Amino acid sequence: MAAPGTAPGIKDAAAIVGIGQTAFARHLAEDERTLACRAVLAALDDAGIAPGEVDALASYTMEDTDEVELAKAVGFGDLTFFGKVGYGGGGSCATVAHLAAAIATGQATVGVAWRSRKRGSGPRPWTNTTAQLPTPAQWTRPFGLLRPADEIAMLARRYMHEYGVTRDHLFNVALACRNRANQNPAAVMYDRPLTREMYMTSRWISEPLCLYDNCLETDGALACVVVGRERARDCRQRPVYVHAAAQGLPAQHHGMVNYWTDDPLTGPAWTAARHLWKHADLTPRDVDVAQIYDAFTPLIPLSLEGYGFCARGEGGAFTEQGALETGGRLPVNTAGGGLSEAYVHGFNLITEGVRQLRGTSTAQVPGAAACLVTAGEDVPTSALLLRS
Amino acid sequence: MLTPVTDADGAPFWEYAARGELRVQACADCGEARFPPRPCCPHCQSFACEWRPVPGRGRVWSYVVAHPPLLPGYAEQAPYNVVVVELEEAPRIRLVGNVVAHAGARLDSVDPGRLRIGARVRAVFSGGLPQWVLA
Ligand SMILES: [Zn+2]
Image (cartoon, rainbow over all chains, first blue to last red; front, top):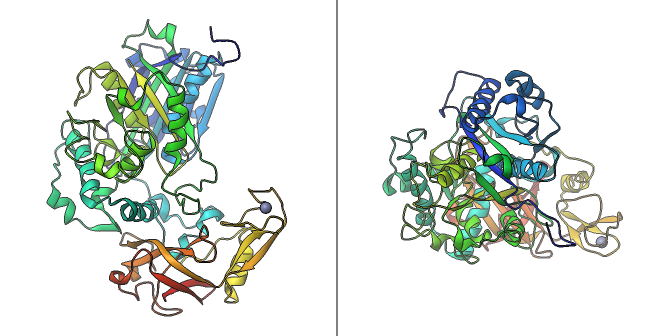
């Protein structure tokens, strides 16, 4: 029991016991709804849990397969908890966090989180000129700041200027992800090595960001199954416990165009990290492997600072000497991440975190017992601290 | 080219810009300027606001040089710069815009090699939008 006056919290109260995914490709023939069904059924099969036992769902507000369609297609039972989290890739870890909270408080017993997206086949969201939110797009888009790559490049230039972060640091990030993808047969970039020369001579997208600083455009779907700790012991797979979880929306934050705060370079990661570590028995030093959201390379050094792996301004230098590679100080994105495995709004970072703690990654960190998984930085975000 | 899809909070900014005036929203009670505009003051929660004229001098806080793929209209002017300008009079007010050779010039009318973080710029106006020229 928790001490008087303190909430029992969600620490280790729930575990991920099943993961599932479809193939990842630039183009898949099946529609998003079908892909969602396949990923969810694969995750339930991995867990050894029947669809009729599912009573909770969590996904992203940008997910187009809604709860009703998924539930009636795959044969879920009566649902008593369902919710969606906003802010694109910032919501990835929050889907699992919400299920863990629902299960810890008795609102549900078996939860499924998922993301299905045909971002490879479908249109680029920024090309839609009619569905723009009035704020803050009125302050940016007329001037040609059109794409997420432009919005992050603006912060990246300032970050490089203030702290001496270089293109070589960003290359270190792209290379670590690509090297891990080259070990992962499921990765889109499995057979495509990256060299420094390719990186330095590639075309610009939005200076200072080049092609290889940008994530892939992928079709695919993933899902995971979350249950309470008692139930987890009886499942087919070794449980991966949700040790701590957090969301982060800092005071006066503005989303991906966070140009109007006192300090735009301390983003949502800092807010999520304060809550995460406060509720954890572990510290950043105890983390064996990390899956850091990587829609753009600069998000990794910024997140390394935010989550306390290094001090403010040291995220670029942290990437030196192979620190992010296998055997380095902090191996990251060990299936290839959004940069080189698949870009499915960060859900593949969650499933890879689970594989590391099961000991089944294609780039296994020996004896990995704690894994940090993060969602998109520079948008309202979320994070999970997983442990075996 | 995209025009501002404005709202009740932002409309005054664009109305002043159409007259060639740069103004920012400020609290009529505690005096704090805020951007982007919003219904009430995050410092004192007052709903009373005023639109304060600012001289339109600033420094480049950061910039990008955008390359295709881009929307038609923008792609034809690429590569072009987009800057964030920090206003001298109100350091926390930062405006996104373009550094151009003169009011109404194309987005690619200044060599990106001339841009630096910290470069001084001043506001000019064209077609209802503020633009920036190197000062
Ligand atoms: Zn006020």
